[in-house]
Length: 399
Image (cartoon, rainbow, N blue to C red; front, side, top):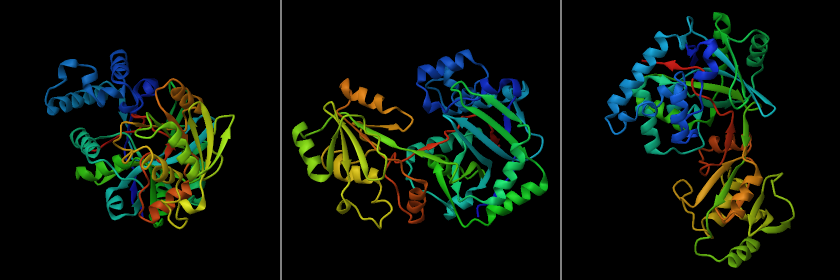
């Protein structure tokens, strides 16, 4: 396991690659997304939400919205904005950003492997979001945002990748944010068979990012496969997921700080704290930075979830002191991925938008695997995983 297979991808015409490809809709404010759609008739946003281009669709039945997406897709294909690959392929995807280059296998994976547990997960999903994504997939047949899956490095896969990476890519462009994207196609029957065979021997693999997308595909029941990008554990990057809390709730500032000092070994710092090791937590409060060192008695070292700093922070500060019981639904807490500078967090506290900020050491890939192997669930927003995929690079159209 897992069972993978090649597919004939829809991809942007070479001269339109930078115009078609977009960030996911949730990465934009509605006003920004509407402006992009109005100025760029080639944007994949027209295949995600046609309300951006036609305000008269708002408030109408979902069937009309999905019909418009179908019309837009027909227009994109007829006018060769999107081209369908003539032969099925397993694709190699490479992204370069922030000085890092990450390479993986872009393919289809059997949903049965997700349902049977051969594809392991470490997060819970929200039913409402699952339903929305499942409805979109069921109505449009457009599977354009892959699930990121990680696995222990396999030399046989690396040999194939090295052989193709010296060739000219079939897709090569720089996105507006400066990220460089390349795609190669593995079409030779022998190479495809080799890749499939190597993956079939893996006892299990692990979702790194995209739990909702995987769950949504499983809900549709229309297609046996979903799009996935496999990157080995050396390629996947996990950054920290920091926290900002709007107010202290029912506790005073003095009492809060006294309680934190009673729980942790606390050191006042003159510079922003970006933790350099596990069990160090940074805290910015009342114009000062503090380093909180976790005491061994605060967690069960044999439990892969209890050992996580995000869990320790939740169980010792966020819930008992600040009253944040469910970080997924409490509007008082905000999360910032590791790509956001610490100075930005500090500035938001200084401006009074938040009362306190917490900085964390990133969860490791090994910790992620340990949690998944134990059938554990990480606290919400535990990992900021890179790469974050653009939409429209490769699409599996399964209708």
